[in-house]
Image (cartoon, rainbow, N blue to C red):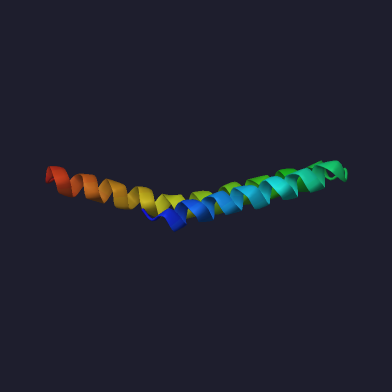
Length: 64
């Protein structure tokens, strides 16, 4: 895993947090929740392939 990957996830988190605060303070809590869920889905879509690579690496180490 690269350090840039971690920075991308952190940047998405910061952007989602700012949007969440802006939308919450303007009285649009529904949109704030949707924005948070969308950010979570994007990050999960980025992480799932990395977890797959981790499992393949572990399988290759133990020769499974």
